[in-house]
Image (cartoon, rainbow, N blue to C red; front, side, top):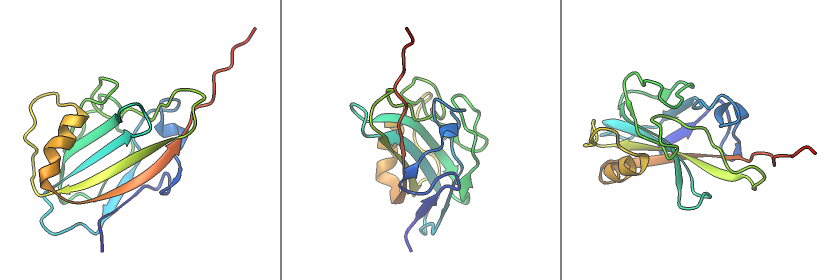
Length: 160
């Protein structure tokens, strides 16, 4: 079996509930995984939007212990992560930033990617950005799984 990633908040290919976006509470959705490959020492979870000009990174949670099988919901920007680290997202804050496409644009596709890594701690300096963490993890990746969600914001209507 292959590494799997799911969320009780939304199924693969469905709309991401507003609670987990910039219009809602802006907290991370709950995630769980299974079928972990042998040799996994840690995990990396990344959320990005490849529909944005040049991929936009919303989250990179890394050095997640290899014996964990999920993350609770609720990691927001600057939430202290008990037991793992969070990189600086493209909003310029540490932690999760909810999907936030420009109002009125078509739905954007958001990828939640889980990587099983053959290293327990990535060699990152202080305050790494998501893109840096993704690059550091690449040589250690054993397997990955993705959960894809969609989200669009309504156009802003002006009165008057």
